[in-house]
Length: 115
Length: 112
Image (cartoon, rainbow over all chains, first blue to last red; front, side, top):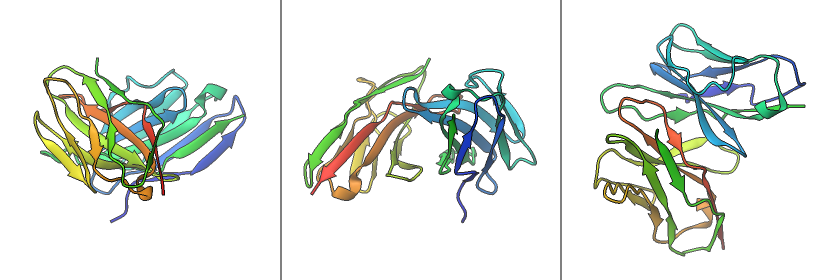
């Protein structure tokens, strides 16, 4: 079946603009995660959704970052007033979170460049 | 909190050489351990996993054994191929904490 998809694949934006990144998880996966991959920091957890709720937002780096999930499916990560340090690859993952099936499947990522 | 330390590399090997990438972890409780691989231009893929002490995960000729006494999960392959060139990430998921904690990644280049 279809894997996790993310859009756009690449985004170039000017400093100070807002951006929205989208994630379509695997159908039926109840859990959804956002991570950020950057040269300096490696792979960092941002936020975790179970259904439409976000019980763990501990990785969001500032209040400029927010995320929502609707219908237990699609998620949007929004970065307001982008800064150059926000440049990174933003990865989304989903998992079933049922019994022993908690393997996280990753999307291809969105490469964000803030100029 | 949880943390993962892995050999950062880069690692360059000739085809058919033996590979070891070291990974150690710090976690409370009994974490599950993973190796992910990222091939050039592609997304992260799960390579193998182990969920309890002494478990051995294996896939595509790669192996890693969950060693609780040394808090390690070293990745090994007996004979690497050019197609194994990629970045390898060690990761853990601890107890009720659903998120993955990753190491910094190790770039492996295999030359013919």
